[in-house]
Length: 388
Image (cartoon, rainbow, N blue to C red):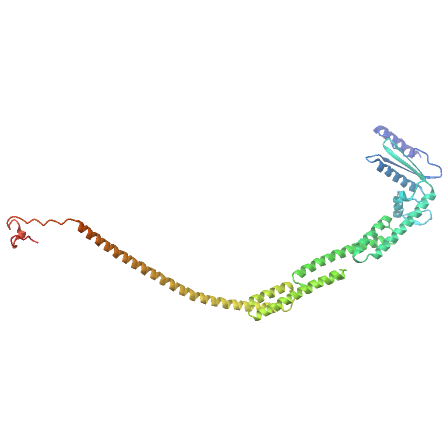
Protein backbone atom coordinates (compact mmCIF):
# COMPACT_ATOMS: atom_id res chain seq x y z
CA UNK A 1 0.00 0.00 0.00
CA UNK A 2 2.86 2.35 0.82
CA UNK A 3 4.46 1.60 -2.54
CA UNK A 4 1.22 2.45 -4.38
CA UNK A 5 0.88 5.72 -2.44
CA UNK A 6 4.45 6.61 -3.31
CA UNK A 7 3.81 6.04 -7.01
CA UNK A 8 0.72 8.26 -6.91
CA UNK A 9 2.62 11.06 -5.16
CA UNK A 10 5.47 10.79 -7.67
CA UNK A 11 3.02 11.03 -10.60
CA UNK A 12 1.41 14.13 -9.10
CA UNK A 13 4.78 15.79 -8.54
CA UNK A 14 5.93 15.05 -12.12
CA UNK A 15 2.72 16.40 -13.62
CA UNK A 16 2.87 19.56 -11.52
CA UNK A 17 6.50 20.17 -12.50
CA UNK A 18 5.85 19.68 -16.24
CA UNK A 19 2.68 21.76 -16.31
CA UNK A 20 0.59 18.82 -17.67
CA UNK A 21 -2.55 17.84 -15.83
CA UNK A 22 -2.84 14.15 -14.98
CA UNK A 23 -5.60 12.07 -16.50
CA UNK A 24 -8.09 10.75 -13.97
CA UNK A 25 -7.68 6.98 -13.75
CA UNK A 26 -10.90 6.38 -11.85
CA UNK A 27 -14.46 6.89 -13.13
CA UNK A 28 -15.73 10.40 -12.41
CA UNK A 29 -19.23 9.00 -11.71
CA UNK A 30 -20.18 6.06 -9.50
CA UNK A 31 -21.32 2.75 -11.02
CA UNK A 32 -24.68 1.31 -9.95
CA UNK A 33 -24.25 -1.48 -7.41
CA UNK A 34 -24.17 -5.05 -8.68
CA UNK A 35 -22.57 -4.18 -12.03
CA UNK A 36 -19.11 -4.93 -13.33
CA UNK A 37 -17.65 -1.72 -14.73
CA UNK A 38 -15.14 -0.86 -17.35
CA UNK A 39 -13.46 2.50 -17.87
CA UNK A 40 -11.67 3.92 -20.90
CA UNK A 41 -10.03 7.28 -21.69
CA UNK A 42 -8.77 8.62 -25.01
CA UNK A 43 -7.30 11.99 -26.05
CA UNK A 44 -9.53 13.88 -28.48
CA UNK A 45 -7.71 14.32 -31.76
CA UNK A 46 -8.86 15.30 -35.25
CA UNK A 47 -11.93 13.05 -35.21
CA UNK A 48 -13.92 13.20 -31.94
CA UNK A 49 -16.12 10.25 -32.95
CA UNK A 50 -13.11 8.04 -33.52
CA UNK A 51 -11.68 9.09 -30.14
CA UNK A 52 -14.98 8.26 -28.46
CA UNK A 53 -15.09 4.84 -30.14
CA UNK A 54 -11.54 4.16 -29.01
CA UNK A 55 -12.43 5.06 -25.44
CA UNK A 56 -15.49 2.79 -25.63
CA UNK A 57 -13.37 -0.16 -26.83
CA UNK A 58 -10.92 0.43 -24.00
CA UNK A 59 -13.81 0.47 -21.55
CA UNK A 60 -15.12 -2.85 -22.93
CA UNK A 61 -11.62 -4.33 -22.68
CA UNK A 62 -11.40 -3.16 -19.07
CA UNK A 63 -14.87 -4.61 -18.43
CA UNK A 64 -13.86 -8.05 -19.66
CA UNK A 65 -10.65 -7.89 -17.67
CA UNK A 66 -12.71 -7.43 -14.51
CA UNK A 67 -15.45 -9.86 -15.54
CA UNK A 68 -15.75 -13.63 -15.07
CA UNK A 69 -14.16 -14.29 -18.46
CA UNK A 70 -10.62 -13.50 -17.47
CA UNK A 71 -8.70 -11.94 -20.37
CA UNK A 72 -5.44 -11.35 -18.60
CA UNK A 73 -3.01 -8.73 -19.89
CA UNK A 74 -0.11 -10.91 -18.80
CA UNK A 75 1.23 -13.82 -20.80
CA UNK A 76 -0.43 -17.10 -19.77
CA UNK A 77 -1.29 -20.22 -21.73
CA UNK A 78 -4.65 -21.04 -20.17
CA UNK A 79 -7.41 -19.01 -18.55
CA UNK A 80 -10.50 -20.18 -16.75
CA UNK A 81 -14.01 -19.36 -17.98
CA UNK A 82 -17.31 -19.49 -16.17
CA UNK A 83 -18.24 -23.09 -17.00
CA UNK A 84 -14.76 -24.23 -15.92
CA UNK A 85 -13.83 -25.22 -19.50
CA UNK A 86 -10.38 -24.29 -20.74
CA UNK A 87 -10.03 -21.81 -23.58
CA UNK A 88 -6.94 -20.50 -25.33
CA UNK A 89 -5.73 -16.97 -24.89
CA UNK A 90 -6.29 -16.40 -28.64
CA UNK A 91 -9.96 -17.37 -28.30
CA UNK A 92 -10.48 -14.97 -25.42
CA UNK A 93 -8.68 -12.21 -27.31
CA UNK A 94 -11.04 -12.78 -30.23
CA UNK A 95 -13.99 -12.52 -27.86
CA UNK A 96 -12.58 -9.28 -26.49
CA UNK A 97 -12.37 -7.86 -30.02
CA UNK A 98 -15.97 -8.79 -30.76
CA UNK A 99 -17.36 -7.89 -27.31
CA UNK A 100 -18.47 -4.45 -28.47
CA UNK A 101 -20.84 -6.15 -30.94
CA UNK A 102 -22.00 -9.05 -28.74
CA UNK A 103 -22.38 -7.29 -25.38
CA UNK A 104 -24.96 -4.62 -24.71
CA UNK A 105 -23.90 -2.79 -21.52
CA UNK A 106 -26.80 -2.13 -19.17
CA UNK A 107 -25.12 1.07 -18.05
CA UNK A 108 -22.96 3.57 -19.94
CA UNK A 109 -21.83 7.10 -19.20
CA UNK A 110 -19.43 9.35 -21.10
CA UNK A 111 -17.96 12.81 -20.87
CA UNK A 112 -15.18 15.16 -21.93
CA UNK A 113 -12.60 16.66 -19.62
CA UNK A 114 -9.39 18.57 -20.38
CA UNK A 115 -9.21 17.39 -24.00
CA UNK A 116 -9.95 13.77 -23.13
CA UNK A 117 -13.09 11.75 -23.66
CA UNK A 118 -13.95 9.09 -21.09
CA UNK A 119 -16.42 6.24 -21.27
CA UNK A 120 -17.77 4.20 -18.36
CA UNK A 121 -19.71 1.00 -19.02
CA UNK A 122 -21.27 -1.50 -16.69
CA UNK A 123 -23.05 -4.82 -17.02
CA UNK A 124 -23.90 -7.91 -15.01
CA UNK A 125 -22.09 -11.20 -14.90
CA UNK A 126 -25.09 -12.84 -16.54
CA UNK A 127 -24.83 -10.50 -19.52
CA UNK A 128 -21.13 -11.25 -19.89
CA UNK A 129 -21.80 -14.97 -19.69
CA UNK A 130 -24.60 -14.67 -22.24
CA UNK A 131 -22.31 -12.72 -24.59
CA UNK A 132 -19.60 -15.31 -24.11
CA UNK A 133 -21.98 -18.14 -25.03
CA UNK A 134 -23.07 -16.23 -28.10
CA UNK A 135 -19.45 -15.78 -29.06
CA UNK A 136 -18.76 -19.48 -28.59
CA UNK A 137 -21.72 -20.35 -30.81
CA UNK A 138 -20.68 -17.80 -33.40
CA UNK A 139 -17.13 -19.12 -33.37
CA UNK A 140 -18.29 -22.70 -33.73
CA UNK A 141 -20.36 -21.68 -36.76
CA UNK A 142 -17.33 -19.95 -38.26
CA UNK A 143 -15.17 -23.01 -37.75
CA UNK A 144 -17.86 -25.18 -39.32
CA UNK A 145 -18.09 -22.77 -42.25
CA UNK A 146 -14.32 -22.85 -42.69
CA UNK A 147 -14.31 -26.65 -42.54
CA UNK A 148 -16.95 -26.82 -45.27
CA UNK A 149 -15.06 -24.35 -47.46
CA UNK A 150 -11.92 -26.43 -47.01
CA UNK A 151 -13.72 -29.63 -48.00
CA UNK A 152 -15.40 -28.01 -51.01
CA UNK A 153 -12.15 -26.49 -52.27
CA UNK A 154 -11.84 -28.39 -55.54
CA UNK A 155 -11.56 -27.62 -59.21
CA UNK A 156 -10.80 -24.19 -60.67
CA UNK A 157 -12.15 -22.38 -57.56
CA UNK A 158 -9.98 -24.31 -55.10
CA UNK A 159 -7.61 -21.45 -54.32
CA UNK A 160 -10.42 -18.91 -53.86
CA UNK A 161 -12.28 -21.25 -51.49
CA UNK A 162 -9.13 -21.96 -49.49
CA UNK A 163 -8.47 -18.24 -49.10
CA UNK A 164 -12.06 -17.70 -47.96
CA UNK A 165 -11.67 -20.49 -45.39
CA UNK A 166 -8.46 -18.90 -44.08
CA UNK A 167 -10.17 -15.51 -43.71
CA UNK A 168 -12.98 -17.11 -41.72
CA UNK A 169 -10.51 -18.90 -39.45
CA UNK A 170 -8.52 -15.73 -38.84
CA UNK A 171 -11.73 -13.88 -38.02
CA UNK A 172 -12.61 -16.57 -35.47
CA UNK A 173 -9.10 -16.52 -34.00
CA UNK A 174 -8.46 -20.18 -34.71
CA UNK A 175 -4.69 -19.97 -35.20
CA UNK A 176 -3.98 -21.78 -31.90
CA UNK A 177 -6.83 -24.29 -31.98
CA UNK A 178 -5.81 -27.87 -31.20
CA UNK A 179 -7.67 -29.09 -34.30
CA UNK A 180 -4.93 -27.65 -36.60
CA UNK A 181 -7.50 -26.72 -39.25
CA UNK A 182 -5.94 -23.29 -39.58
CA UNK A 183 -2.53 -24.72 -40.49
CA UNK A 184 -4.06 -27.33 -42.77
CA UNK A 185 -5.73 -24.57 -44.75
CA UNK A 186 -2.53 -22.52 -44.87
CA UNK A 187 -0.54 -25.54 -46.07
CA UNK A 188 -3.19 -26.25 -48.71
CA UNK A 189 -3.00 -22.65 -49.94
CA UNK A 190 0.80 -22.84 -50.25
CA UNK A 191 0.53 -26.15 -52.08
CA UNK A 192 -2.10 -24.75 -54.42
CA UNK A 193 -0.02 -21.65 -55.16
CA UNK A 194 2.97 -23.86 -55.95
CA UNK A 195 0.82 -26.07 -58.19
CA UNK A 196 -0.56 -23.08 -60.09
CA UNK A 197 2.93 -21.63 -60.58
CA UNK A 198 4.24 -24.97 -61.89
CA UNK A 199 1.21 -25.30 -64.13
CA UNK A 200 1.80 -21.85 -65.64
CA UNK A 201 5.46 -22.72 -66.20
CA UNK A 202 4.51 -25.96 -67.96
CA UNK A 203 1.99 -24.16 -70.16
CA UNK A 204 4.64 -21.62 -71.23
CA UNK A 205 7.09 -24.47 -71.82
CA UNK A 206 4.51 -26.31 -73.91
CA UNK A 207 3.92 -23.22 -76.04
CA UNK A 208 7.65 -22.71 -76.60
CA UNK A 209 8.25 -26.38 -77.49
CA UNK A 210 5.31 -26.46 -79.88
CA UNK A 211 6.43 -23.35 -81.73
CA UNK A 212 9.95 -24.78 -82.11
CA UNK A 213 8.63 -28.10 -83.46
CA UNK A 214 9.68 -30.24 -80.47
CA UNK A 215 6.35 -32.05 -80.31
CA UNK A 216 7.48 -35.05 -78.24
CA UNK A 217 8.82 -32.79 -75.47
CA UNK A 218 5.63 -30.72 -75.74
CA UNK A 219 3.56 -33.88 -75.16
CA UNK A 220 5.61 -34.69 -72.06
CA UNK A 221 5.08 -31.18 -70.69
CA UNK A 222 1.36 -31.53 -71.40
CA UNK A 223 1.21 -34.84 -69.51
CA UNK A 224 2.89 -33.24 -66.50
CA UNK A 225 0.46 -30.33 -66.65
CA UNK A 226 -2.45 -32.75 -66.77
CA UNK A 227 -1.16 -34.51 -63.66
CA UNK A 228 -0.98 -31.12 -61.92
CA UNK A 229 -4.66 -30.54 -62.64
CA UNK A 230 -4.83 -28.89 -66.06
CA UNK A 231 -8.43 -28.60 -67.19
CA UNK A 232 -9.60 -31.30 -69.57
CA UNK A 233 -10.80 -28.81 -72.18
CA UNK A 234 -7.46 -26.99 -72.23
CA UNK A 235 -5.61 -30.31 -72.40
CA UNK A 236 -7.64 -31.44 -75.42
CA UNK A 237 -7.05 -28.11 -77.14
CA UNK A 238 -3.28 -28.43 -76.65
CA UNK A 239 -3.30 -31.98 -78.03
CA UNK A 240 -5.20 -30.78 -81.09
CA UNK A 241 -2.48 -28.17 -81.68
CA UNK A 242 0.16 -30.92 -81.63
CA UNK A 243 -1.82 -33.01 -84.13
CA UNK A 244 -2.28 -29.98 -86.40
CA UNK A 245 1.48 -29.42 -86.46
CA UNK A 246 2.05 -33.06 -87.39
CA UNK A 247 -0.56 -32.97 -90.16
CA UNK A 248 0.93 -29.82 -91.69
CA UNK A 249 4.40 -31.37 -91.56
CA UNK A 250 3.10 -34.54 -93.27
CA UNK A 251 1.52 -32.46 -96.05
CA UNK A 252 4.78 -30.58 -96.62
CA UNK A 253 6.70 -33.88 -96.74
CA UNK A 254 4.30 -35.26 -99.35
CA UNK A 255 4.68 -32.10 -101.46
CA UNK A 256 8.46 -32.37 -101.15
CA UNK A 257 8.36 -35.98 -102.34
CA UNK A 258 6.43 -34.97 -105.46
CA UNK A 259 8.92 -32.20 -106.23
CA UNK A 260 11.84 -34.57 -105.65
CA UNK A 261 10.43 -37.02 -108.18
CA UNK A 262 10.13 -34.16 -110.67
CA UNK A 263 13.83 -33.40 -110.06
CA UNK A 264 12.99 -30.03 -108.52
CA UNK A 265 15.44 -30.59 -105.71
CA UNK A 266 15.67 -27.03 -104.45
CA UNK A 267 11.89 -26.75 -104.00
CA UNK A 268 11.77 -30.20 -102.40
CA UNK A 269 14.51 -29.21 -99.94
CA UNK A 270 12.54 -26.09 -99.02
CA UNK A 271 9.40 -28.17 -98.26
CA UNK A 272 11.38 -30.59 -96.10
CA UNK A 273 12.93 -27.77 -94.11
CA UNK A 274 9.53 -26.16 -93.48
CA UNK A 275 8.22 -29.53 -92.34
CA UNK A 276 11.16 -29.85 -89.92
CA UNK A 277 10.26 -26.50 -88.38
CA UNK A 278 6.82 -27.91 -87.58
CA UNK A 279 7.87 -31.41 -86.47
CA UNK A 280 11.52 -31.89 -85.62
CA UNK A 281 10.88 -35.39 -84.25
CA UNK A 282 9.59 -36.82 -87.55
CA UNK A 283 11.81 -39.87 -88.28
CA UNK A 284 11.56 -39.48 -92.09
CA UNK A 285 12.94 -35.98 -92.31
CA UNK A 286 16.68 -36.51 -91.66
CA UNK A 287 17.02 -38.98 -94.58
CA UNK A 288 14.89 -36.90 -96.94
CA UNK A 289 16.75 -33.72 -96.09
CA UNK A 290 20.16 -35.33 -96.67
CA UNK A 291 19.10 -36.84 -100.00
CA UNK A 292 17.45 -33.67 -101.30
CA UNK A 293 20.46 -31.59 -100.24
CA UNK A 294 22.90 -33.97 -102.01
CA UNK A 295 20.90 -34.03 -105.24
CA UNK A 296 20.45 -30.28 -105.12
CA UNK A 297 24.20 -29.73 -104.78
CA UNK A 298 24.92 -32.12 -107.66
CA UNK A 299 22.37 -30.46 -109.93
CA UNK A 300 23.69 -27.04 -109.06
CA UNK A 301 27.28 -28.11 -109.86
CA UNK A 302 26.23 -29.44 -113.24
CA UNK A 303 24.31 -26.28 -113.97
CA UNK A 304 27.35 -24.22 -113.04
CA UNK A 305 29.63 -26.20 -115.35
CA UNK A 306 27.18 -25.92 -118.24
CA UNK A 307 26.84 -22.24 -117.63
CA UNK A 308 30.61 -21.77 -117.54
CA UNK A 309 31.03 -23.62 -120.89
CA UNK A 310 28.31 -21.61 -122.53
CA UNK A 311 29.79 -18.42 -121.17
CA UNK A 312 33.26 -19.38 -122.51
CA UNK A 313 31.93 -19.99 -126.04
CA UNK A 314 29.90 -16.85 -125.96
CA UNK A 315 32.87 -14.88 -124.65
CA UNK A 316 35.19 -16.21 -127.41
CA UNK A 317 32.67 -15.33 -130.06
CA UNK A 318 32.12 -11.93 -128.57
CA UNK A 319 35.87 -11.25 -128.41
CA UNK A 320 36.29 -12.28 -132.11
CA UNK A 321 33.43 -10.08 -133.14
CA UNK A 322 34.91 -7.25 -131.19
CA UNK A 323 38.33 -7.47 -132.81
CA UNK A 324 36.74 -7.81 -136.29
CA UNK A 325 34.74 -4.74 -135.61
CA UNK A 326 37.82 -2.89 -134.40
CA UNK A 327 39.78 -4.01 -137.54
CA UNK A 328 36.99 -2.90 -139.82
CA UNK A 329 36.78 0.36 -138.00
CA UNK A 330 40.53 0.96 -138.41
CA UNK A 331 40.37 0.10 -142.11
CA UNK A 332 37.47 2.46 -142.59
CA UNK A 333 39.35 5.21 -140.80
CA UNK A 334 42.48 4.56 -142.95
CA UNK A 335 40.44 4.68 -146.18
CA UNK A 336 38.75 7.83 -145.07
CA UNK A 337 42.14 9.38 -144.25
CA UNK A 338 43.56 8.43 -147.67
CA UNK A 339 40.48 9.78 -149.42
CA UNK A 340 40.75 13.03 -147.45
CA UNK A 341 44.45 13.32 -148.35
CA UNK A 342 43.72 12.76 -152.07
CA UNK A 343 40.95 15.31 -151.99
CA UNK A 344 43.25 17.78 -150.26
CA UNK A 345 45.97 17.17 -152.88
CA UNK A 346 43.53 17.68 -155.74
CA UNK A 347 42.28 20.82 -154.11
CA UNK A 348 45.82 22.16 -153.79
CA UNK A 349 46.53 21.43 -157.46
CA UNK A 350 43.37 23.19 -158.51
CA UNK A 351 44.33 26.17 -156.38
CA UNK A 352 47.77 26.36 -158.00
CA UNK A 353 46.22 26.15 -161.47
CA UNK A 354 43.81 28.97 -160.66
CA UNK A 355 46.64 31.09 -159.28
CA UNK A 356 48.75 30.44 -162.38
CA UNK A 357 45.85 31.41 -164.59
CA UNK A 358 45.35 34.64 -162.74
CA UNK A 359 49.06 35.72 -163.05
CA UNK A 360 50.05 37.85 -166.28
CA UNK A 361 52.35 36.31 -168.94
CA UNK A 362 56.08 37.03 -168.41
CA UNK A 363 57.77 39.18 -171.13
CA UNK A 364 60.31 37.45 -173.43
CA UNK A 365 63.84 37.61 -172.19
CA UNK A 366 65.99 40.42 -173.64
CA UNK A 367 68.46 39.45 -176.38
CA UNK A 368 72.02 39.99 -175.32
CA UNK A 369 73.87 42.68 -177.33
CA UNK A 370 77.58 42.81 -178.16
CA UNK A 371 80.21 40.46 -179.46
CA UNK A 372 80.82 36.83 -178.66
CA UNK A 373 83.70 37.77 -176.51
CA UNK A 374 81.41 39.94 -174.45
CA UNK A 375 78.80 37.21 -174.38
CA UNK A 376 80.57 33.86 -174.33
CA UNK A 377 77.26 32.02 -173.86
CA UNK A 378 76.40 32.91 -177.46
CA UNK A 379 79.42 31.26 -178.86
CA UNK A 380 78.56 28.68 -181.49
CA UNK A 381 74.96 29.87 -181.78
CA UNK A 382 73.55 31.51 -184.88
CA UNK A 383 72.73 35.09 -184.83
CA UNK A 384 69.45 36.02 -183.36
CA UNK A 385 69.30 32.97 -181.01
CA UNK A 386 69.67 33.10 -177.33
CA UNK A 387 71.53 30.54 -175.31
CA UNK A 388 69.33 28.07 -173.58
